Image 1: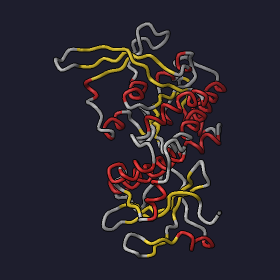
Image 2 (image 1 turned 120 degrees about the horizontal axis):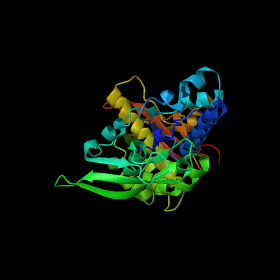
Image 3 (image 1 turned 180 degrees about the horizontal axis):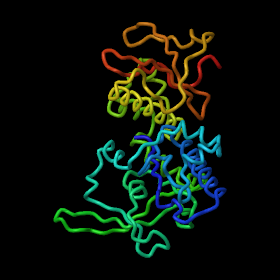
Image 4 (image 1 turned 90 degrees about the vertical axis):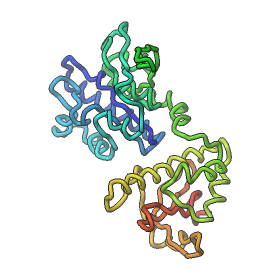
Length: 317
């Protein structure tokens, strides 16, 4: 599953603030999401209501600020952002627990929103994601927010416990969580050999031509390339899965995908498992090396992607 962000609607101001402050809140939100996208560019921003309807001050929504021509760059960025509402959708798609069986609340002793249901922050805790807040109060500027978790036990009684949700209201907060988020995003694979051995289970919508085995198995434990290979391959797998279910004409990729230039086309011709030469033009970048993942999208016999190259950019020595 891609990195899940959860917009904390409790951080929306309830009292009037100057318009300039509302604009600053929006810019801060975009800065935070940008930073999180550096961890996983497939990320999804989950909201309890459509993002454009979030009030940055009573009577002033994100849509109104965008329509007035403020925050032009931020407005363009929002168009590229994968966001969805309501929050219940993520539970359904993650095959999560029955939402009637638990509830997260802000503790009664909190300086603001005391005792209020905290759906977004609660889901950030439950699904090991990241709560994203407007910097409207010191509580929402904290790296972590304490929550009360109420759950129904097997006897129908309510059990209460204290938990902590990850939270970010600025790029620096995201940096504080980066290591733990990366750990939670990656399945239990420790090197390329693990990834190759588990590819059918972890990446069911991808197939690989023979030459990619050595490329993937050659990634050693601790190599930062492993994280990036996983992010790109799992993002590609998710896009194909969504394409299959939605039955759209083309898959929608969570990162930039482009065809190879005509002058380099001969570099991306490889034999498939049947010895047939194929051209793997479509590719996406692979950090931290100057690398690429090349693939072909196919509809038969089922919708899938055929991966032909995982590694350093071809033809650069």
